[in-house]
Length: 193
Image (cartoon, rainbow, N blue to C red; front, top):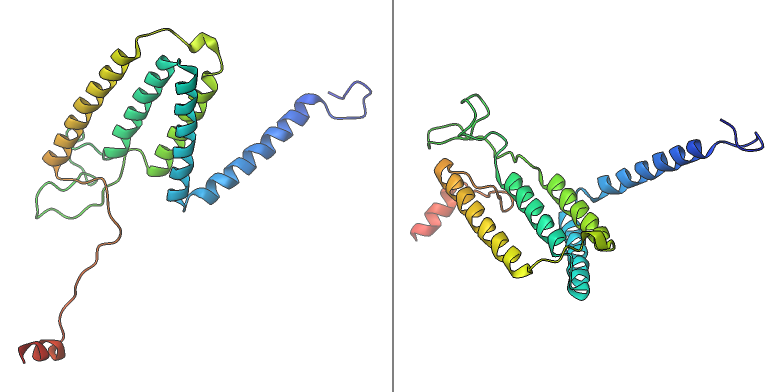
């Protein structure tokens, strides 16, 4: 539909174009940040610090923080878990090796690092915005929430670590594995001298 005078585009068309342009630019910057995990995580740490300072100075929104903590714990479990859970899945070609004679299969996460980072950052931003609305400031005794979250974290991580030990997988890799290689005949003869 045309504008009031019939010579310009409607507001919905302008909004749709703006949203499309914004979405394209946002995706462009997300794609550019993909190969820079340290910078991304430092930015998320800065956002988390701002959120913690906001909650500290306002002295409230503990329920929002508790919900954020539960959500981040859920994301962490997805990040540490294999895509194919050996306990639940029938052994097909994508399972983890359980014996030394099994063929090596790389660890594939249920939640990739980029999605893990993006979800945490979005959750921090949403929680930060929620701290500006008093409806989310439910009065609670925060030490109980903190204690309950710590107990939940310890029990969940214990279960996850036992799962890792039972199925012999490590969800982290520290760089590329390096091999020493074979010694040449010249280097072995000089070592005999």
